[in-house]
Length: 287
Image 1 (cartoon, one colour):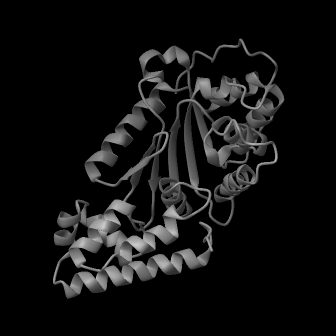
Image 2: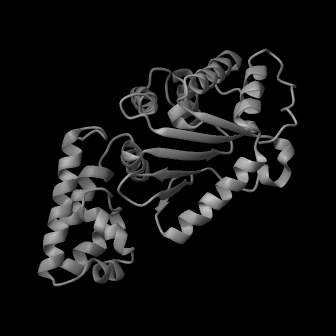
């Protein structure tokens, strides 16, 4: 039976994974840094694996098995808890688990609305675009959509994750799901801004090279573990927590924030798009 991302059993099993990793590492008389060097990850990754706060990918689990001579135990855990999940890809599951624990999220999206801010019709339209042969009542798409919508709860009580998004203007103009679905999505963004659940800035196309030079990325900040940078490609995701990498990403994010419209000007621009005026240009004001 598959274990859903939010199931408490998933957390318990990852904690057990971490306890076993620590026990076997200590039996092998290896420090976290020594084990990390042998499996080609950072020492902080090993520490987070052992605390049950980070989930290793299949290739890392395989190297842990080889170094600690487990007979494939860790690979089987990862296969059960990540690889065998019926809906989400492993890298998506890893990101969702991290997002659940984050106290703040800083997002740059180049061509779509961030998942945590999506409406049901917008999300369904995206999933159907990814799977053009799926029927209108496809069960997997329904499950994917339900789980995406539930992520929005992180922005309200009791979690109250702080959320800052910089959206490339194109993400607001592409009519995903059609004009009415897109208008509903834009109104939802406006509601999230007014409710103080999110701060949104628009990066106008007029910003030139800045508006097209970057792919989407997310920075997740935590209370008691290192900030991580997550980038995602078509079939893969990369999560890194090296200090120099995260610092560089925050520098880029600061540049984007200074180039984008101010939050107030961004709100005005999003509101203008709901007035049936697709040819409107963003205000000239930057913040």
